[in-house]
Length: 373
Image 1 (cartoon, rainbow, N blue to C red):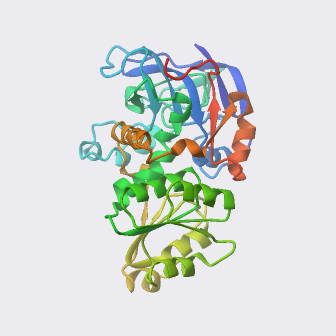
Image 2 (image 1 turned 90 degrees about the vertical axis):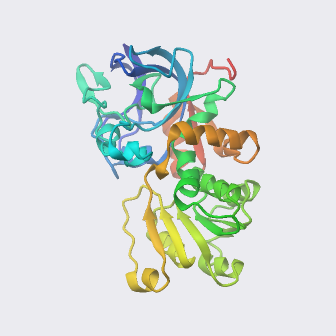
């Protein structure tokens, strides 16, 4: 089957949309999904420019949403016509999956970051030559074939144009708080970087009952949006020292939790320094940078912790519906971060994300889709 897809030919190249890409046939546990839309994530950009690599050429995208067209003979929980949000793949069989931690699947890297299908075949080829995929799917396409375990079924009244980023960006930010940090009501949190991931973490902090939810950024419009979405305080770190301001806002103690979404060494260090005694920083950015700190002064004497987070202990089939419920209650208004772009304008959309002009670009792949149908 021939499909249209956005291809990155070599490291650092722009996206090129091609209509001659061969798609793998539907296997026994696969589903074929007609793509409606896909968010652009900073992880896509990291791979495009070479901070991480799946091999080139590559088709990126992993924040897709669409409608199932076909299912394999062994698929049990999905059928043609179902609406789905895409997520990562976990085998469901290893000890970590059986403990309910699919993000720590023993074969996570093999299945999601090898550039091939879970069974080792090519998802995509052009003229018989291999093209790498991402997350056992790749959503910068008009159609994908992926495993049923990559899919989260959602109600048909959910607007698929807006839902794709729930499978990565929004679940990463919110899950860092809900699943990993787990703040108790009355505790405090500061989020460094108010992109889609940071704002999702911030909203989750508010939902969790944190009495101080502090947003830190250098872009006034983002800080304004953070306040609209529930931040108790907003700090422009270009204009004032965020560590001193956070201490001022917390009676000199610092916050119980910080989340860094920037991956910038100076900011990651500020996120440590802003912690109260016994506090925890979650570092969740995909970054080529290293963080330097004093184990004795920054961690041991203050009993602080730094943790890395990979997909935030999420179970997408549970966490995505939870976010949609919060959204319906007016508690997780993620749509305010999104801006639509035509699929053909993918390079413009990606650039807008890189320079911070757009918080969450969403590519509209099927322009004829109508929500609720």
